[in-house]
Image (tube, rainbow, N blue to C red; front, top):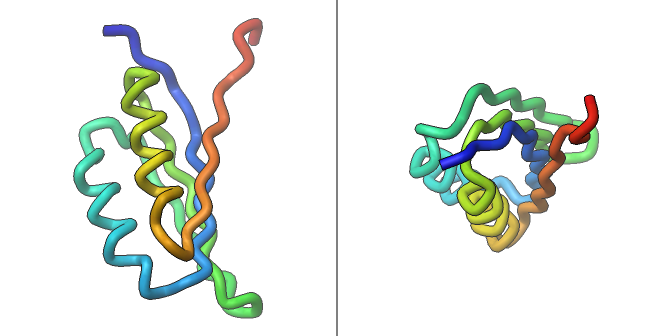
Length: 83
């Protein structure tokens, strides 16, 4: 199956969501290339970026599961086709 490289941007505004967020990421660990998290204490949020290499349906499923968690926003960015 063809895979795509993508970046999932996550903003966590509720610390209580961290456990569920980590569960989803653990379930998807085979597709994760790398992860970077930055706590922004001034605003009380965390900014997380997840680099993935996975089939498009898996990327969409991961982003959907993350976005469904209360206190979490998630969006996916894909590279331009003509890079």
